[in-house]
Amino acid sequence: MTTTGARGTPRSSGSVGSTAAQERISRHQAAGEILRARSLLVVACTLWMVVGLGLDLTVHSSIGSGSLTFVLIVRFATSAFHVAMITPLFRAPLPSPKLAAVLVVSVFPVSAFSLMLMATHMGGLTSPYVSAVFVVLMGQAIASPGPWHRGAFFASLTGFSYPIGLLIATRFDSGLAAQLADRQAVVTFIVYTSVLLAGVIVVVWGGHVMWSLRQSVFESRKLGRYRLLKRIGQGGMGEVWRAQDRALRRNVALKILSPEHGRKPSRVARFEREIQATAAITHPNVVRIHDWGVTDDGVWYYAMDLLEGMDLATTVKRCGPLPPALAIHLFVPTAQGLAEAHRHDIVHRDVKPGNMMVIAPDREPLRIELLDFGIARIGDDAELTIAGAVMGTPGFMAPEVLAGSPGSARSDIYSLAAALYFALTGKSPRDAKFVPVSELVPSLPGKLDDVLVRALDNEPTRRQVVRRAGRRARRGGPDVGRQLHDRSRSFAAPIAIPPSIPRKMPPGPTRRAAFAKPRNVSARGAF
Image (cartoon, rainbow, N blue to C red):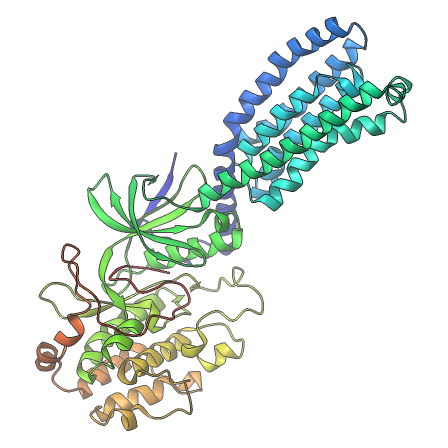
């Protein structure tokens, strides 16, 4: 089962509030855990009753002592507890992620504790019920795999509740206390406890391995209807893969949230907000999402176009500053795409050269695609932003955002102008004392210089609206059409690399963006 969505049904800020978004995230998170665990729990609880009853009768007949009635009461009471824990996992709506985790994990230490209680009446320190604790430990590792530090806590709780409980029981049961004087019984108990310790270690290691396998997405793995071909980007929150859409038989870029972050509601909220914001915008210069979903094992992803190109930061570093005409040609449509986002009440909050992909379609001029709405703010939804956190990239952030104010459309304008400044000069306006771009680029049209000065004003209310600034820049620039044919070839050559023709990139400094290394093949929305 895979829950999916599509670009055809965008969710805007007007219809989806922050509370509803968090509730939806919680349901998806719980679903990922439930789909992995509930079938195992049903089998385990069935074995607890069917095989367990046979074990009780066999042990009682072989030992010939102890209270079978007490053992059966504990057996049935524990089974009732199992049913109480499992039933909510099959109900709609699903429980919250934290409650779902509690329901799944609590089954195993309670089962081990029940086995300890039964052992007090069936053999005591030398009871064969210790073998059943190993089965419980294995079930726990399969049902709830996790990193070693989390696994060590829960496995220890399950594994050691049995021997520790028996030792405590010796203080209240004279029969058990008498076993402490029996050297053979004590040695047997020590051996059992040592083997249990080894079992806990193995279970912790095995659970960590299973969890690690879920963290790494292998090339042979399938994600929903997508077959993963090659990883083309990796960042702190996940990966971007070249993937084949098996239904439509085409290659796409698949952005995958790592399962580790998929357990954190704040990270899932950011990922879902990125999907919402991008899907709400229909503009050729803004990333387009085709499909999104969450798999049975809780891996979030979305599919987008696979592009050939480099981000603007890498383009400028490797090829040098852009000619004014080419910069105008690239930035005016990008400004219009950003204005489209603002019309949907979406503030990007991280406009920078690293999030602007320069692509070179066959026999067409270069163009920019605006990427990564991962920290976008939709409408007045501020609940998903960490209090006191500064969201964005400092070198291209507006002064008021650096001071702690929330991002706005006018702060996006500043960031876009800072990216244009970088494209024309190869420098960030914050690298040193601000120098007007006309002093660094003498051939710059005066009106474009005026646009940049206004857009980079420290006072937000004095910044021009994006569309008005773009029109002034285009009117003030030289003949874009004439210069594009002659000047853009030097920029298109290292960018437009057909997938079937291997070609080395020109030497140059490596990208220092926060998330991904530059690659010849990139993706819309890369980290």
